[in-house]
Length: 378
Image (cartoon, rainbow, N blue to C red; front, side, top):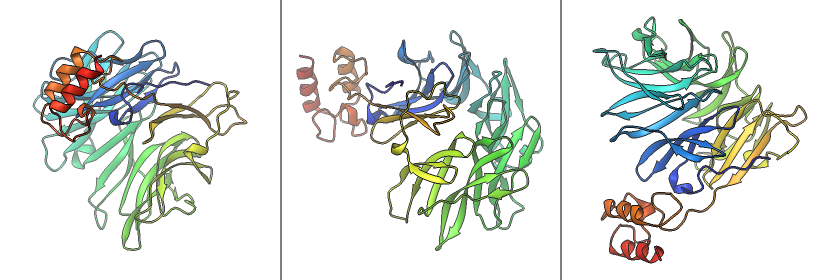
């Protein structure tokens, strides 16, 4: 059993979001600190570590990590969205092609270090288009994507990107699932009555997990779908009328959320070869052995779920760690209450959008919070 808590300081208010984990258990993602996101890496030895971005950088995201430690992501750099990679020592930025594109957004990282993402173009008719980057060279995938908008959401370990494209020829026009493998761009079939579709994850050899929206009771309801090049299957969703399955843990083993009825609460669920179970019901098993496929989730109650395919006799392995409560008054999350926290509080003075600095619970930052902080300093 492995217990880990990269959000021990930040708690629920931090909005911790872990995007990827490599075979060594190194996690990367983003953490919300007041009103902006900051990319981080977590290791057992070092805990949470930020990346060395230049001053003024904003909303940085770590999207993927390879087994040899290369990390890729994107963020606001010098006033524009830029991709970046970090090899453990050096930060390299992925700039747009000169004169052609406005920004670069990373969605995935292949095992060989190839970065996959979206270029936000200056063409109002085709606002986004896919790209690849490796060893300092960015390549736009121009044909046929620049004739239609393509929105990517992720990439597999071999660099195959997936997402959706705008099918203007459909009646009515709609977003439909697409995969981009090398220069091969392949749309995938969805039901003719669907109003929307996109690939959410790889589900196995030549099979893709998708989210589609189906008309029902006058509404468009999200449903899961399994797609191949020539067919689609809509899995049984049990008592739920709406279901997002957007993470493939293993073949025919997916996680997401579901609800019944428009006003019902969303529940974290696992779809296990047709059996639907709450994520909380996933069993812990110390004999599961080596995990081959990992996905980390952060729930609303401050619990981290690490799901993976393990021992053949265990369908799912869950490693669960409750997040330690934050230290009252520790605004910079260093485990102490000191001068740096005072500076943060003063920078949030009179604002109502920095709830962590609202130490007296008044709804605004003011004199009462300053008095509380001074008391907490002892």
